[in-house]
Amino acid sequence: MVPRIPLLDGSSIPAIGLGLYKVPPEEAARVVADGIAAGYRLVDGAALYGNEAEMGAAVRASGLRDELQVVTKFWGDPVQSFDAALADFAASEARIGLDVIDGYMIHWPRAPRGTYVETWRALQTLRDEGRVRWIGVANFGIDELQRLADETGEWPAVNQVESHPWLPQRALRAFHAEHGIVTQAWSPLGRGRLLADPTIVAIAEEMDATPAQVVLRWHLQLGGAAVPKSLRAARLAENLAEIAPLDDAAMARIASLESGERTGTAPEDRP
Ligand SMILES: NC(=O)c1ccc[n+]([C@@H]2O[C@H](COP(=O)([O-])OP(=O)(O)OC[C@H]3O[C@@H](n4cnc5c(N)ncnc54)[C@H](OP(=O)(O)O)[C@@H]3O)[C@@H](O)[C@H]2O)c1
Image (cartoon, rainbow, N blue to C red; front, side, top):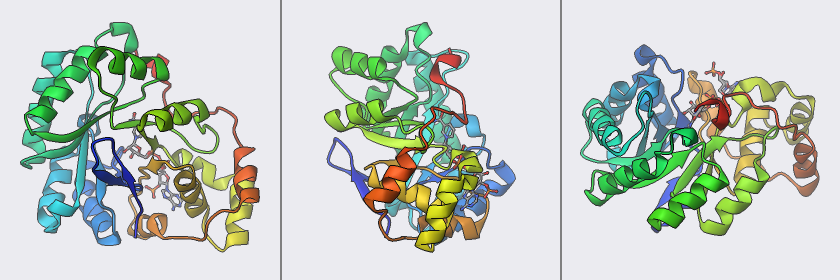
């Protein structure tokens, strides 16, 4: 059973969801169906990923729509504005083909443009109209989160950021915890590269688990959520399987891996 993490509005999301970045559209319906069969109850889509229609079709075909959290994101390029967010949401909604989208996020703050607050107001409008259940952001830093709260009186439910043992995001996680924002890790497995790390491999061997299971267990023990991606049914199941808790010594060995290394784009490089 995948643990759930509470959101500020009193609802909750599964701590492990299925990432859909770089899942080709011709494979996406099969991957989502395999994921749902394995026990995933959150699918992490985005307009950018080019597979919203297949994600929606697989959710509709599953017969489990009411149990599932369907998430998508506003890309914000070339234009990030109130009107662009409403228009792009309408397009995502039409592609996905569901009456309501569970989670909608601003994909990047694009802080130099100075329009993320008005964009956040568009997401609030969509939520208030009942077209979205909860609203969140991705790749926001502390200053941007604080500005949303100061100017609109509302923290995002979720901030989805790159995080894994090389980049644990300690300060941001502490800020999130203080304000009830869920930390949801993207590239939680370091795009797969982290799984060859000798420390992770050694802990996995000692625990009779796999490297991916150790890393995902670390995310859960930090109190965060994660959206690992895999195209393969066996790995989808492996990544959801429960393992024994990591003891303090194992958590400390994993903490020692922090290097600040990113496997994806930094927010300041996506203006
Ligand atoms: N908000 C954002 O800006 C943002 C940015 C990037 C990603 N994301 C989200 O985060 C999700 C996950 O990130 P990601 O796809 O970049 O990286 P990831 O989940 O950390 O890693 C995926 C890679 O790991 C491999 N893998 C998965 N499970 C494995 C296992 N058990 N054993 C060995 N290898 C395994 C996958 O290969 P196979 O597929 O071949 O199994 C794939 O190459 C994305 O799909 C997307 O939903 C969001």
